[in-house]
Structures are given as C-alpha cells and as structure tokens.
Image 1 (cartoon, rainbow, N blue to C red):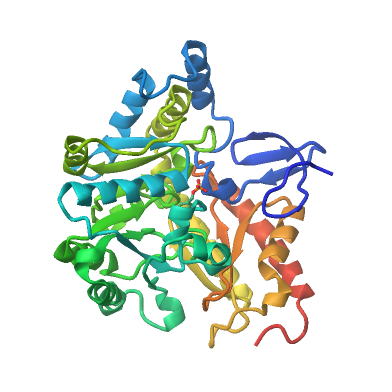
Image 2: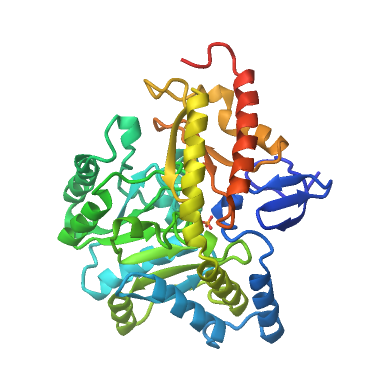
Length: 444
Ligand code: PMP
C-alpha cells in the first residue's frame, strides 16, 4: 500500500514518461492527456524549449529568496506577463499556485481599501457554483458546498450570487437581456450587503472545474464591470484555468473586451513544468499599497528563478507557435465533433466552452435537464472507461446545484486535427460502453 494519500485511497497506474499530448505508464500503456492534467499542461509535455530553459537556469541558480535578490528570470517573466495584460495592469506578484494567487489578490484588494481609508470594505462577493482554490481564504469565496461545508465554521461567510447558468434556467445566452438579468443579481446583492462593505467581486471569465466550462451570456461581463465601478467594488478575474491561451485568447476575458482590476493566473502559466502563479494588478493600486507601508503578504517560493525561467519559456512557446490561435482553431473542430456526439447520445445534455476549454454534461433528460441519479456515479464511471481506453478526462459532479455530471475535454493547445479525431473516437467508444451499462430506467 502506498504511504501517499490525496482525496481518497484511489490507486492509479505509475507514470513513466510524458511527451506532447501523450503519457505512458510503467506497463507501457499510452494515454492521450485529454484534460492536460487539470487543465495545466497547456503546451504539452516535455517541451524542448522549456526543458532547455530550465536546465540553463538550474546551472546558474535554482533559488534566490525574493527579499534578497532580483533575478533576470523573474524580471523578464513579469515584463512579459504585464505586456499581455490589459492597459493599466502592469504590476506582477508571483506565487506558486492558483489558490495562492486568489489569496494574494484578495489581500492586495483589502490593503488597497485600507490605504484609501475604506476599512469597512472586506466582503468579497463570489458566485455559486465556482471554484477558487482549496486554502481557507480561497475556499471562502468558492461556491461549491461539497468542498466548503466541512470548513464553514473556520471561515468568514462571503456573499454568493448565482453563476449565469442560462442553459439550466432555460434562458437564451445570446440575448443581452440574459446577461443583464444575472448581472442585476450582483447589483442587488451589493445593495443588500451595503456597498460600503463590499471590497471585490471574483469571477472566472470562462468557468472551470465547478461549472464545466461555463461561458457567460452576452453583456454579462461588461455589465458586471459597470456595476463594480458604480459601487467602488474591485473586480477580480480568476483566470487560473481560463488564462494562458486555452480559450483562444490569452485571457478568457479578452473575448468580451473587459479589463478587471486584478487577474489571477496559474495552471497553464507554468504549463505543468513547475508550480507557478501570479497576480497581475493595476499599477496605481500597487503604488498606493506600497506607499502605505507595503504589501503584508508573501510565500517563500514566490518568484524563484527556476519557476520563472520555465514560465518565461512557456510564454515564448505559446507566442512563437501561435498556440492560442491553435487553441481557437482546434477548439472549433473539437466543439463541433462534441456536438456530433450530442446528436448521437441523448445522455449528453449540453456541450459548452470556448477554444480548448470545453465540456459536455450528462443529463437524465434533456427537456427537464434533470441530472443522472447520483448513485450512478456517472462522473467517475465514464472517466474510468475512458481511462481504460487510453483517454484521460477530468470530471465533476456539481452536487447541490441543478447541474449534473460534467466532463472537461481540454487537450494541450498543441493538439492537431488528426489527434482531435482520435480523442473523439476514443470518447465515442467510451460513451457507447457507458450507455450500454446504464440501467434500463436511467434515461428519462
Ligand atoms: N481558481 C481556479 C479557477 C481554478 O480552476 C483552480 C484550480 N482548479 C484554482 C483557483 C486553485 O488552484 P490550485 O489548485 O493551483 O491551488
């Protein structure tokens, strides 16, 4: 028995090696990394440019404590990340993961309010469902009861508004009235809480694990920006999953041409080569905080040169290979092939996403949008079947919401058309077996 433990005792095959979109276990079995791990390995595995950059940096220095040294790698990565961000967001704070990025963004927002004499602002409004990380601060803004409930007494309750799940509410996501309808819920909540107490609103521009690639309805992103401005509420875009090019733009929010005050990045930013994340903040916010005694926050591994050298090479690879463009193109192909599967399998209730941040959701009945019974454990069963067939998927069951079992199909952004077909064939084969196993009364 392994001494290791994670969420469960679940035993997995031992990984031997990985290259491109493929992974091999020690028995020699090959898998397609259909979810880029947890939407992390965006540029694929064993990229020569990144490995070479890491080697080069390792030979110079792997660690220099951020309060003792600046490094060429961290300066260069900050410069490059800021150049990608919207105008006015030019300051970068490095961390080692998504939860740390969210914690850091919330603390920077709080200190900015304090610096401006607005000590009463502390509430960070978030959405349900949502996922912003596993640490207690990030969890307090996470709208996903299965992960938050045991820790409720240890957290300060933060207000939640419904995520705009237009498809479940039977609304037309293309109709601007739909976006305005959900955005109005944010405004109502700000007024109910007392605008002078609200510090920030945190949102995943394209939803991640908890919503299964939820794309906001028309006008939603622009309207929430306006509402935040009206009440002096800071807007945090959690681009931990949607950032880094996966949606077909470097930041997911670029699809709606809106700029937040703070951006959280991780996952594809380090590309699975090293733990890495960042907060990109408005210059004037950072200046204000630094003028008022400094940012009271930091993590030991922040901005270490090895991580930054790897991150820089990841961004160079995305740029020189136009992987963001490829994500847009291959995303269109994969989305249309997933819609074909929806035609073939009535159990697929919805296909959604942007670029290569794509998901499909299983339902008992498309008309009522009822989920499959939880006892079927569809989210884990289909993943198991796909795994046996050599395809890795990422799934969730959003219990407590209306949503059912959803599966993220998010191969690395280097995927080509032939490989997309292979993924779809494996998925088809896996769905056929999954459906054949369903009890006779499972579908409505
Ligand atoms: N925010 C979002 C949108 C995420 O998808 C995740 C991870 N799934 C996190 C934050 C937390 O990141 P990490 O697991 O690296 O702490």
